[in-house]
Image (tube, rainbow over the protein chains, first blue to last red):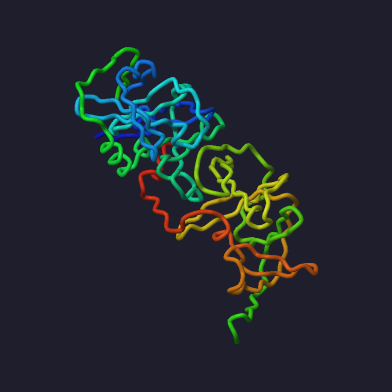
Length: 178
Length: 161
């Protein structure tokens, strides 16, 4: 009988692929597994409908996909950063959220995710899964489910105009493997 | 004995720290180390007093500027970070406090604070003719003592190679 040893496979399973992206000069990370698509802003413009909720300025557009509404969150507005020129949209998996970011820096492997220190005790606890040290830098790892609350989704759903025939623009998109 | 009367405790060790023109004390048992300022990593958040984090011995340590609360103004310069233990309920973590001068270890008897004192004052000590506030870091620095680390946002993925 052979005893299973901690193999390279199990070692690899303990790391996580992340995408480093930039918003207003600030670098963030998101798990690549939680990003379904990366699209250029231009490719999305034809499919997006404008939303104007004064209480929720970070969401200005919705993309209808069948019966599903995908809310586009401006990451700069969400994090309270200065407005910037967004170039990419991350369509996030398992949420009805897409994230407007300036650009993608690179992909990397995260070996360790440290919980956000307990001194941080406000909304940021929902924003981030934690922090990771990468190349002597500390980078916040965003929580894909932390961009919109259930109340905000309800508010957005209620504000939507009647459903029209959806037209999707498929150009310039990159489907990421799960 | 009235409530305003103070209680004398046995002599214990304190670290004296300097913030601008004033000196404060922290129980030595709460102090981890005094380190030279290093790069602060900043990211968006909504918690007051927190400047960012530093990397220290592989740990990510929040930097908490308490000068505003204690002096009524921010620090124009900083010489060291005093790394101290902050308790959050049953948990504890390091916090880095910027200080403007050398620190000193002394032994003194603390008079515990009274009801009239601010929550961040744990007590008072007398040293070289000066009466010095002993700081209660748990009250002085931000943090939710009832914070649940089982929330998804705080789950730690340990994946050390």
